[in-house]
Image 1 (cartoon, rainbow, N blue to C red):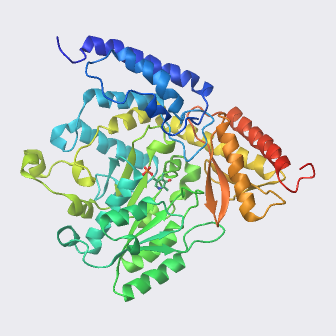
Image 2: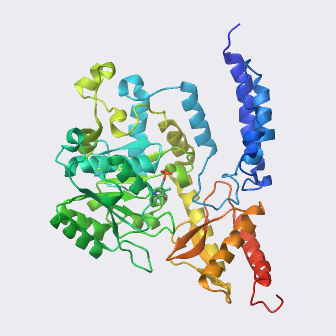
Image 3: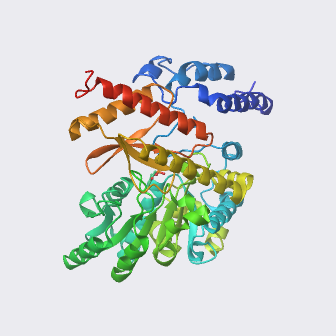
Length: 492
Ligand SMILES: *Cc1c(COP(=O)(O)O)cnc(C)c1O
């Protein structure tokens, strides 16, 4: 007898699994949003060693329900408002399952032509849907590629920028000069990580000032830093502008930054990991002002707000030559006719790993299931609910809402009249903990200008107006209850 699961067994268990997922999605709302387990609890509930003999699949499903589920935080819960949404829609889950079923390893075109060609198609489609410039399309000098995460994509952009800044010598000689990367205090930490990995080190990362009110990068300060560094013998390599920062969705002035980049011949990378997909909606296309004219590379994550389960990042570049120059290596065991004739794309040269999953399938199933119309409706709903929430908070005495909030994220904080800044921040954190341990909603925090703010990110697949309303009710209620226990309260 074979040790493998036969196709008939697979059919049976596969149906069980699909049913399990359908049941889960149908009743996800009945779980506490944030897992309430203590560290080590899940690990201790499982056998310490692996099984010697194979077990029935039902035993695995049973442990999933009994042991693992209490340790799961429900990102698809309609009252999950933490971080950014991580949409897992039905068509995406099924597309991912199909990708697993095919078991393709698409490192080169020849290893599965459909994997490469569908990817080229869907990234060009997405560029069109987001009204990104024609030069990002694969039929021009640029092109897009699906990666595992925005972090990897920004690293790849930095490697391409280094290739260009070092006149093509970095790939051979390494980082022999002082190459510099420009970010702001609001830039995602993955850029500093990329600088460390690429050999620039954290010392090679230069922090550009931000406008204290909008938190957007100051192009004038960028110009000053670039000139100073160049005069001191550094090689300014890449500027990262962010469209929709992780902390507060601040938007850097891409056009003004791009103008400075052009003066200095520096690569402009645009990190629009969360917000970029909002450009599906014509009324939000202003987000990408300046991208068409100035960006050398651009990244956005369908795996956040665009209904495609993790992982699915798209990176576009206006010129694929430096990318390929930085990353192409062709060992003997990967040589094949299609590659040597140069008639195909080998996406392994566009990313850090060699191997690649057939991720285009899930983006394709999502784009075809929803259509542009359905995708726009999803983005608009998140934006509308966020705007409503912000208006409720702004109208509530004792709360402050951060302006502007053009997308699905609202940052706000209670004022805590009688407390100094440090105690007020502690009270805000305590409020968040009470809300999150209640199990009925989940939100996260950030710190702006030294002060704690709560973040509520709206845009889940299942999130409806009533979930946002209920969350706001609960925030007000817990805030009032907590206020009564604080010093300064007459009843204290
Ligand atoms: C989420 C986020 C990232 C990181 O995305 P990963 O795909 O998880 O690496 C980078 N930049 C911004 C602006 C983000 O919001």
